[in-house]
Length: 355
Image 1 (tube, rainbow, N blue to C red):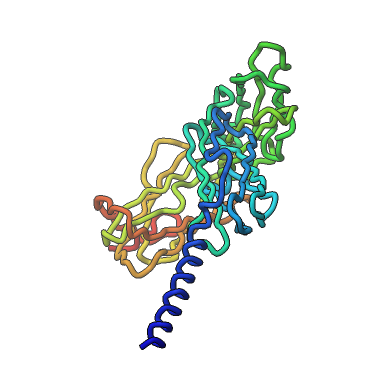
Image 2: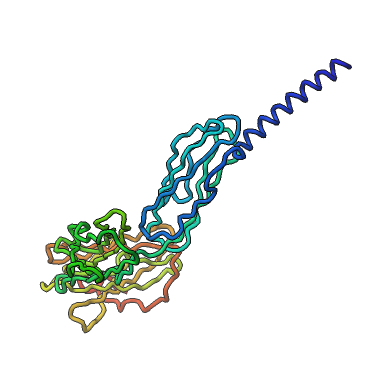
């Protein structure tokens, strides 16, 4: 009986010891003190770099090991620890480098600092109120050009909302496709004005570029401008791809064929890779635009594409134009429209086939 009681006491002491060790590991964060306990960057301008340091102190009697901290916004908040091992009654420094990017408003973030061997971690709240650094007349530019109608330059006016240390440097952001330059020389007290122009190297199709215009002084935040140019080919055909629904077996679509070159482009042949696609030209009174009616039949859910409508021309830049016809199972079916009149199949007049 005495031996049994002695063994019970031994087991109880071991169990209590394990419980205390587990409690210490799980509650290690109670031995960490952070100053300040919350980081508020206050008012920050968009695209501005700011930094703040936090002191992490071990107020316990045993060393702590900090694991890799993580931020809820890794793209805008960079974290650096001066050390990972934290001896008793000593401190290390956590450095926070924050750049909110273009997003305005109140930002609420946090930094999670795990402790090795602990079930919990240290959570550091981070906040900022992001304000626009500049008033910009146009922060998104769209140019529409063709061989017949070259794009014109756009003038941007920029007014800083703070006292700049330097001045914008638009010349540094020119690209092969866009030329950026001063519209008027900068002068004290006047808005900054510069131009953005598509260059002759602009490729066909839609080209979008984002410019982060810096200042001559790195203490000033940059500002962001987006420019998009649609450089139409000699024959501009849209929409491409053509999307049809799987919810209706018979559907009707229109292809717009727009002449954008001073040289007349002749369409030589039109063919469809799938027999379910029939076509015919629609009458139009516009000399620079033609309408191609597409009739799609027996559409099912078994495939994602019906192949291409292939248009060949006599223009050296566009010998062959391919317009994909794809199935979108989520698209709402459009109303059925009358089928083609039933011309004899022709590669230039009608691809509807005899009825």
